[in-house]
Length: 341
Image 1 (tube, rainbow, N blue to C red):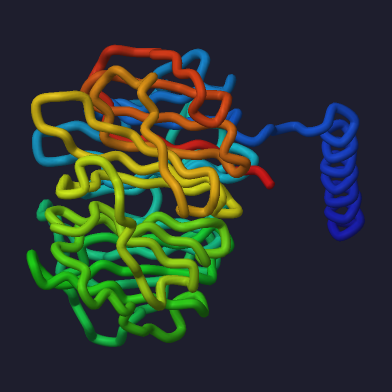
Image 2: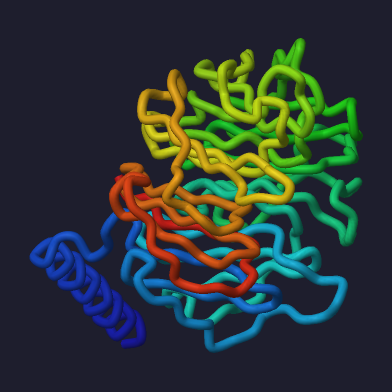
């Protein structure tokens, strides 16, 4: 009977999953916070399975061409799946970054920790800001629904909290940027209070796992390069007393709790300063040990593991920024690490 054979095979599959789960528990854990890392270099994707100690190019080179570049990468808490999106294509890896498979072509993606909730702009564009349709998926990109009705942007940056409930969309044009926020998974949207915030960046705010703590970036504020929020992006306030406070903030990242916060400032003609806060953004110190030019940063869930990439290569810290090791001298663009709570 085919039904008996089907149920026998199904039970064997379930038993195999249970055995795998027990093995993971016995060797606890199968994955560790910050263990799996991902970075991009021009058209290539590199992965690390040992906290950034070694980096290996993926077996497949998903994108190529002068008009295609990486815009988004994401590592799930256990290292599987991994997502990557260029200006044209989107990909998923089910074996820790070794191989990549094409998926729905939604550019400018953002993802929750597990990839269950995703935010994307559909349509093709090589511009920094895209006038496509904002869409939300609640089933790992299998199906999508339109957000914000018929509004078509321009949308310049997207962010989704690890939990998937908080979302931020950067919309508008230069000197007239607006932050749209959602705290219900994209069902409803509201404008963040950024009064007094000068020259918002096209890059979306960095968020803690819940979305409660956020860092928004400024391009030329006379007050501060970053503005912070502790109420899910409802209100942003400037951080004063920072060095090079008139500089441009390039990128930021937060630990899951939001206690560890890191951001990079642009310093023309010198190494970009990297600043770290260990008290939810109240006080900041410069990480003087970083001696190369970096422009992107990622932080593990605990904040212990930090990776920064840029024109100077990759630098890795496994002690919350106290010491750093350079792993490559090539030109890198994006980076992400797994956040396992």
